[in-house]
Amino acid sequence: MQNFPEEFGEPVGTRFVTSSVAGLQFYEYNEIDEISGKPIRPEVGDRIELVREPRNRYDKNAIEVRFKNGQVKLGHVPAELAEDLAPIMDAGKHLRAYAVSGGNGHAWSSRIIICSDDIPEKLHRKDLHYAIRAYERQMQDRQDIGRDRAKAWKKAQHAWRKEQIRQTAEPFVKLAAKEHHEFLTNRKAPDFTAEDSIGKSFWNTRDIPKDADGLPQFRTKEEWALDGFKVKKGQKRTADWEYKSWRYTKYKALYGAHQVEPLPPPDLEDIEEKMMSAVLFDWICENEDDEEEERYNSYFWRLGQDRFRDDL
Image (spheres, rainbow, N blue to C red):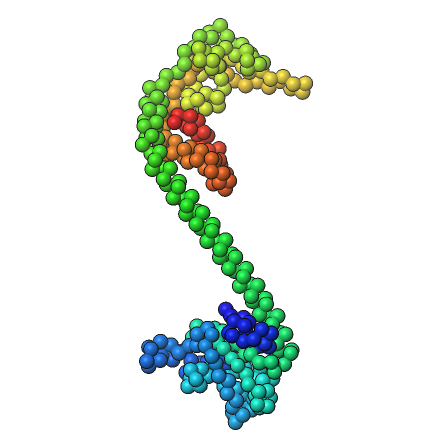
């Protein structure tokens, strides 16, 4: 929206006042033009003619608002403003007016700006204050629009790059997922070689016997589940992990490798999905997208599937 007279070719510092046009619904405004076939509405910057109408039976200060060289009557200057401007026009002073907004076809929607050095100071100062506020809002809106466009562009670029990564990694992920699924399907429980430790209590995890791969032979149910095993039904604890403090002693039940069996392997599609998520997660970390990384971190925290990244 135009706010200042300088934008219409007026000298810098010209006094002005802006106003809506009253009575649009009663005259030729928004009627269909016979030549162009479009609604009759002024465009921003169109010259507007102000014509005194002293014989108006409703208001002796009435001022008509016309455009297209006075051929089209839009309405009137609002009565409160006309009361201040009518004496100026009656004194032979010229008021110049321009369309600020063509409106949307409804009453009071079209606005004009009236320029003249003879406009009272009180009207000019009031409208200048409003114009400055409107200009500041307009600049802020432009900044917000630019910021929103930049965010939208960045989001679109990020989505495009992520899709490219997905398409590139897809054949490798499918191969790795297939191998991992075969591994989980054919996996067996580790060999148990710590028969002599059955029934013991360990106060330090370093004292728990290890197998050939350096993994503990006794673990809690939760620890076995993290590695893809579950304790067989009806099995009782075969060892304890003992934790002592000056206030209490705490025990945790341990189960040997001979008491567990592999969990059923997940579907191949689920493995592919989780592996692809791991690939995208690593790419997001490298690109320092904090918001997306936080979302993926919570995803892996819920599923506990960070280990799938190692299978790639």
